[in-house]
Image 1 (cartoon, rainbow, N blue to C red):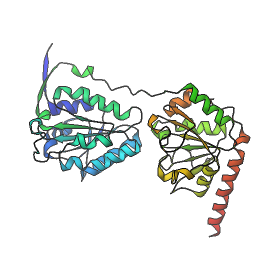
Image 2 (cartoon, rainbow, N blue to C red; image 1 turned 90 degrees about the vertical axis):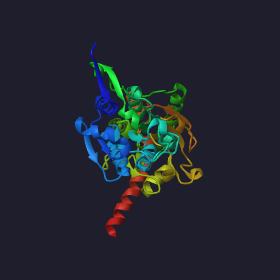
Image 3 (cartoon, rainbow, N blue to C red; image 1 turned 90 degrees about the horizontal axis):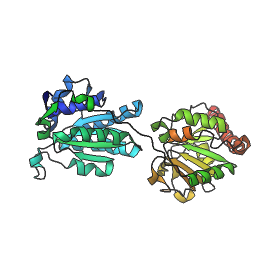
Length: 365
């Protein structure tokens, strides 16, 4: 079989193309120039930013809007550390991000070389995984794994730090090697426990004032159609977190805006008056709970989330369903059909009254 030789930088760019990366937000610098110089010869669109932090935030915004992985690129040292704020933001909001950074040559790592920073070490607390690519032969495995990790389960950022000499290495490959590079299949997670599921059914069937809190997870899992259908069928009123805005149409009669510090009074009153809260894809952060011991004092919590570490993390949870929300809705479309309209009537009327009064007051003022 014929062999082909590729420079490491060209090989990395070709691998990104094969992973179907279409756009890259980048700022040049010495330790990343070999890769940077290959971008114009690729199919990827290059968006030049004016500061590395802008590259991270632009890639994050791209991922939020498209649902695809956002890719940013910067040089070593201060260039790389300028990405950190955007990476941390992607971590906080569960945004799939691939951050590529240049690094000093492998033999200089650990010597305090010019513009050397331990980016993989710095980013461990704010990434799902941080890689240091020590040899060009590791590129396919690392980049494919980084892509899959960023998009799988609860999405988030992944860092790949690439020393300059790795970018300059030559690699010999079999002709037609590209056919063996496949875009990783992103599997949706469903670890629903039957006992927890039965407990959730029972709690909701007994509820007199049930309320849904919809979070960012509904958008990340692309389950907004399913939750809208669920609310329509079950006639359960709903509020959202700020990051959950867009899950429901603003004119949905069962949607009562967002809750929390920056939310609506009637939405917060609904939470405080509910006897069962169905929390879908939220993390119960302090912007919505404030004082934990005062949050939803009458409510039993049913929580559906893809991240098991959220189970009871901030508020006591009576039933936790560990599942991707889209799978949850698809696998259990009639799970709560035993709830009848009259059980949600009281809280719906109460919220409607608050909303109506607020509208009238605004018009009078």
